[in-house]
Image (cartoon, rainbow, N blue to C red; front, side):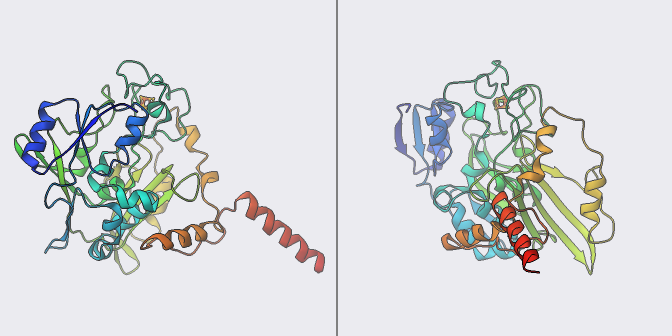
Length: 366
Ligand code: SF4
C-alpha cells in the first residue's frame, strides 16, 4: 500500500484551498473507491483529507416544488431508504439498491459514487498495463483485448472504458444538477455535462478541476419521475457492475405514453442520455411503442466491442434464481426491487436441467 498521511477538514473554504494548491492531496469520504484505487496503484495521493466533518453536507431535503437536494456526504443506503426520494424518484432509490452490497452502501457517499472511476481491468491492474487513462500515451490494451464490458457509444481510439455508476444513470435521466463549490464560488453543473467522453484525454473522467468540491446534487421535479424504474443486466445476480442498464420514466395518459425519459449505463464513458429527438428514441402513441421504436432504430456504426455486447441475452439472470436475490437484499435494507419473474424468461443451466427432468418424469408417468 502506498504510504499516505490523513487529516480532517471542518471548514469547506480551507478544504477547497488545500485541494487547489496541493496536487498530492485527495478528498476522502467513504473511501470505497479511492482506497481500492490506491491498492491497485491507479491513484497515489500522498495526503488524504477526510471531509466527513464538513457541516450540512449529509442532509437529504425535500424541496417545496417537488424535487430533492441530496448532500454529497449522504450515504447511499440513507438516500435509498429516504421516504421522499422513494416516493418522488423511485428510479434513484432503485439504482442505489442495485449498485453494491449492503456494507458498501452504508459506507459510500453520493458525491463519491458519481466520481468513481472505470472498472476496466487494465486500468485497475496493479502491474500497470498499457492504459491511456492511467499513463497518458501508453496505449489502450482493451481496444483489441478483453473489452466485453466496454463502450459501444462515444468511445475513442484512446479509451473504450465505461462509467460504472448506477446512480449516475438515474440522475442523468432525471436531469439532476451537481452543485460544486470551487475557488471562484459556487457552480451548478447540469448532470449531462458533468462526465466527459474520453476523446484524446481519457485521464479526465469529469469536468471538475483542482479545488472543486461537490457539495450536493439537486434532482428537480418532473412529471415522469413518479413512474420510473431502473433495470440492470449483469453477469451474476448480485453485486455486479452493469453490462447494460436503463433508467426509464414515463408520463401516461390512459394507455398512451405522453412523454418519457431514458438513460443508459454500461455503454459509454458517461451515462448515455437518449433525448426524445434522437434516432434511438422515437415514441408516438401506444404503451409498447417506446420498446418497439428502440428495437427498430438504426444501430450505430459497429465498434470492436459490439460483438461482445451481442452476447447479452445469455447474460440475463435466471428467472428462478432472481427472486432469491431479492429476498437476500430485503434482509439487508429497504427493498424496492422485488418483482415477479418474467414469464418465459431465461433459466440458468441448473434450473434448465431441473425443469427438463421434471418434464420428462411427468411424461413417463403419463
Ligand atoms: Fe485504459 Fe480506457 Fe483502454 Fe481501459 S479502455 S485500458 S481504461 S485506456
